[in-house]
Amino acid sequence: MIALHHVQVACPRDGEDAVRAFYADALGLIEVEKPADLRARGGAWFRAHGDRGDVLAELHVGVEEPFVPARKAHPAFVVDDLDAVAARLREGGFEVDERERTTFDGYLRFHVLDPHGNRVEVLERSAG
Image 1 (cartoon, helix red, strand yellow):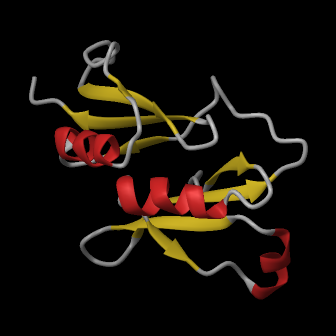
Image 2: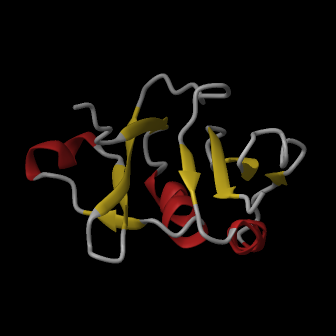
């Protein structure tokens, strides 16, 4: 069996408040406390839970110095309402790129950069 536990992206030192505004407030993930042994490293962890409380997705944001944003490698999150998530991101001041909205069979999607320039993909299963 293979399962994906989490994906990690990076942020610069003291970039945690900005990632909270993006991943929690705009994208809708829930911040979870990092283990005590890892807190001093900085960063933040986020999760999405299913209806039964199971973890559906987990993202770790770690501090990296020197920081370089990931422009190609990226996490991709499947959501129930793509347009609602896009609206929340726009309201948060993030630019949503929908140029590839219909280029992935079975999904509608968009890309957005987190506040530190890391690429993020957001998808919704399409009806057709």
